[in-house]
Amino acid sequence: MFILVENVSFTYLANTPFAVQALRGVSLTISRGESVAILGRTGCGKSTLVQHLNGLLMPQEGRVVVDGVDTRVRGAALKGIRQKVGLVFQYPEDQMFEETVFREVAFAPRNMGVEGEELEARVRWAMEAVGLNYEALKDKSPFELSGGQMRRVAIASILSMKPEVLVLDEPTAGLDPQGRTALLERLQDLRRQWGLTVVLVSHNVEDVARIAERVVVLEQGRVVFDGPVREFFACEHRMRQYGIIPSPLLQAAFLLRARGFEVDPPLTPLELYREIEEKVLARRKPCSVKV
Amino acid sequence: MFGKSVVIGQYVPLDSAMHRLDPRSKIFFVALGIVTLFLVQSWLSFALLGGFFVLLVLLAHLPFQYVLKSLRPLWVLLALTLCLHVFFTPDDALVLFGFLRVSLGGLFKGLFIVARLVLLVVATTLLTLTTSPIELTDGIEGLLSPLKRWGFPAHELAMMMTIALRFIPTLLEEADRIMKAQMARGIDFESGGFMKRIRGLIPLLVPLFVSAFRRAEDLAVAMESRCYRGGIGRTRLRMLRFERRDYAFLSLSLLVFVLSLSLSWLTW
Image (cartoon, rainbow over all chains, first blue to last red; front, top):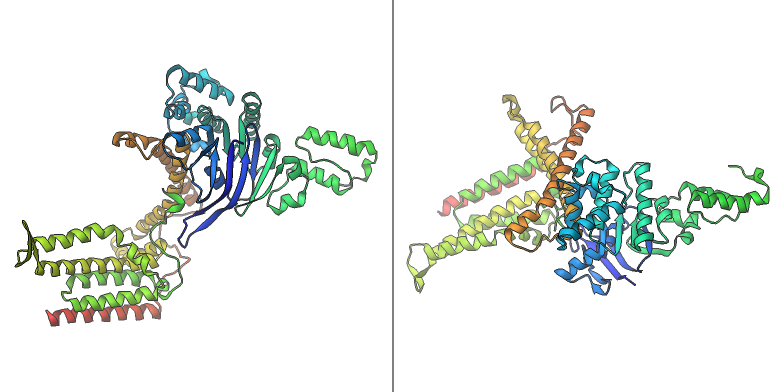
């Protein structure tokens, strides 16, 4: 396993009247090449958990081990953990400050001591990996770009560290539909082509269905579900119980199931169509379906 | 670290007699208390005032360590004051350490000043611990509004203070988030030389200013679209009203202050 989270608890403002316990004994392992979605309602501890994965927050109880190194190290080893686990915050474009896109994307590798040709190669790779035209954009100001482009520059500025795990907190929030689709496709490519491990924090069931193979659900700082994405999507009651609203696709499948068709939870429109073709149309009584 | 580990101001939200007082009467109390503390000259008066403050802390249901915590930044000042008085009072020396003379008169004088400073801080802490920043600005606006007659922009000042206070936690949270985002990109805010640290602030300050300007613009638009046009004819959700308890509190405070002043003059 690559990341080990063991019995981690964390309380904000501990020992004050304002104390809020965000994590209560969370245990979790993430292996190389996996794609995991962390789901849960607002305030369930998702963001706190991901900040533990690269040592931005230290566990008050329990431990977090990344590639064999406990995150409670200091100095170069901590930088090494942050390089291995690239964390993209929510609205990452808010962190941009450089004059050109090139300098923005080069910021992280420079902090890691990368210089010269290697630096340029990395910036080019990172920008192309998220579908940005290196030559056309490298000298532009990041503040002139469109929202979707800014988001991708911000993600490229983490990718340029060549992390082994990419953790994204609500990467599609506030993007228009085109920007969202493009970004999700790029993330899938990154997994397929470069074997990147992806951890996705999201409310959005559609994003999760497209990217993740495994789902971890947090509720009030505890892990309440950890398993394959299809298993989680199979039970509407459980999804709603944890405050997660099924995507329209899943709702359609649940409606069919409520009427006695054994439709498996679909991840894509095509899958739903195939399921309907195979299990509903084959039974030749489409007229009994009242929607 | 900022953000969730920092409490803005010192306000402790409890429900107590002190919390329920009108902010204006608490501001009055602090102003009068400060004047009294500077005028009184006897230990007896200090004892009386100190006892009164302790009573108020009890009334406010505040744990004493909160009050003591507000003294913490003052330790250096207090120690320095005491030392200067002890060593540099041209008085009969009690003990001699080389060139240092320890004087008894100086020790007393030093302790006296320290007691005065401690009581000053306790009095103001009583205000800030029991009054939320918003109540405080409301109180200040209330106290300044008689000056409106001469064109003093009391409402505008209070609104600016309210907005500033409102956005301190937001900006701190934002600073915390940006700082973490840059730390995730390998920047190190905690080590390196002075110049390196200063340069390290650019990745924090530029995004912070960008978002502050954006927020300011959004806020201006939001206020205008709700027809905000200054204080004239504006009504309030929470009206400040002097209640019986405020009169009681102020009379009691006045009584204690006058008593301690007269004690001081009698024994002087």
